[in-house]
Image (cartoon, rainbow, N blue to C red):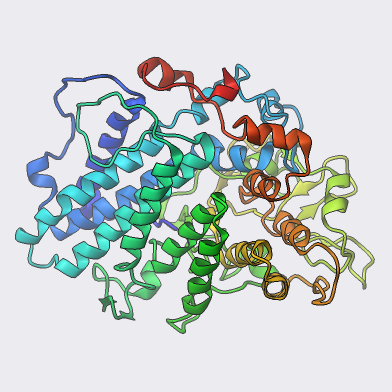
Length: 521
């Protein structure tokens, strides 16, 4: 959901300042007091001066969040591997994550469990909230409406960063003001307080955020920073985005009544602009073939919360994409993927042979290849997400370049979350209707209203299929087992807070007030 627009030199000054601040913020791990001179290329006196500074600050915050999620493939390693559907081929570090050995001595473990990059987002958003209003008196092009919407985005993005961290580590330090060169040690804050803060911030931001940018939205009429709806489509957090994040905060806490309310708002309002660029339910071509409404390719309105890597803007990279882990020949010149979904797992997940994602083609009598290719080999290739750009010049795939988005949520995912909430609350028929809405374009048999089968099991089974490779599997398992409580082994993990990751040793060494999660002591 972020088109970084880093080629516009008018915006580089403040973006550079924010990114330098991010590097400094990475020491949040924390030093008690670092009395150092600021090394920013842009001073505080000149940074908050022009309209361009405001835009650069906004885009810089999104860029930091994208980096936090994509760095070292964090989003997928934490969301898709532990007790998930993927198996590793040769990488021992991936195998350790899959079996839950999260304190194994691999460099990747210490890197992805260091939360400093998320606190870079929090510091940058807090700084923007505190300082961006200064532009109003210095540049008449920058209006109060513009600033209000910008600050609302900063508050929503900061809240999202906190929720994202709570899912990983549980209790995390709650910091609501910026710092520049002075880092204080903070204890971890109870996650209930952190999530209450995040939800309150999102509710406040949602009152100001538009449903769309650069169109005739009543809360933000006309162009936004001189650009129209097509330019901003899928780039920024909207009112729908805020409600989507709130839906997940409440579901994570088991507060399904609120989840139902928030998701209903989404269902009632997501198409209010009436254009082709609004969020929508997508067909198979868009889901797996990088079509116009693909949630993975480029920036799209279907990315309700997501962060794009725009190839045209020079943002394609070799790292920070699931393709780096899952693709191999014949899609890229790499003999073996780092991870794959075993054939038995595929067959157990996709039982309906009419399923367009993976099923049996009635004409050719061959398995469909939308999600997997080379199914009859030992290691099928997961190709659902395959946004490959120029650069695959190495026989081992080392130089392959990808530009798929880091996607958090889309309409199908939120509809299934709504179905989950309705099922837990006892609204069985409404839950089935939501489930069938989410699956309507996947070719599978609808769940019958009169069926005696467990609808909650059906909803989570569908989430497993639809969201495979999108970073949801572990978090879905947590929510499912919190509801069901019928798996003794998982119950033990829940009761002992083993669902959370250990905290990086770098964080613990830098801040003696941070205590390791007890499960990993």
